Amino acid sequence: MFLFLYMELAAAKLKFIEAWGKLGSEWGINRTMAQVHALLLISPEALTTEEIMEQLSISRGNANMTLRDLIGWGLIEKQHKAGERKEYFFADKDVWNIARQVAKERKKRELEPVLKVLNELSTVVGDEKDPEYKTFKKSVSDINKLAVNVDKTLETMLKAEESWFWGSILKVFK
Image 1 (cartoon, one colour):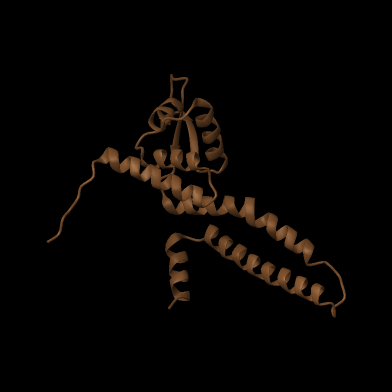
Image 2 (image 1 turned 90 degrees about the horizontal axis):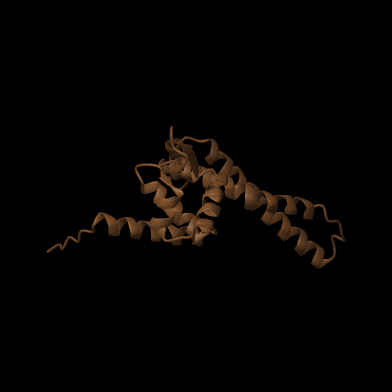
């Protein structure tokens, strides 16, 4: 016998916002930032700062800072409605666009600085017979190769259409 449990929409929205916030914090994104993004993802209409504050029980300062960060990440946009002074915020609902935008920002903020340091470290000179030098050089070289491959994969993802990208990934695992 199957037991089907139904969740009310309001409870489901809260659960989604909480889960997206948890996922975001595990990926190194501020929990509130992920929760605001989640709220805007599931909202059919653009929301004002006040509506976001009310629905998530956050302060104006936190809301303003979070909205600026989300705009900076390219995950939401601000719009104005004719005859109104309020600003409205909305999120792109296309998950492939979201994934690409997050990958682009993480690449810029995390991978590119590491690649720069690894390139600098690869120019270190030393005695090829010295075990410390050889170990250092090999470790840096191996990590650099991995980082370059990750960078190439991200570049492919950023330029690709969703169906082509996943088709290519699945071919690798066959």
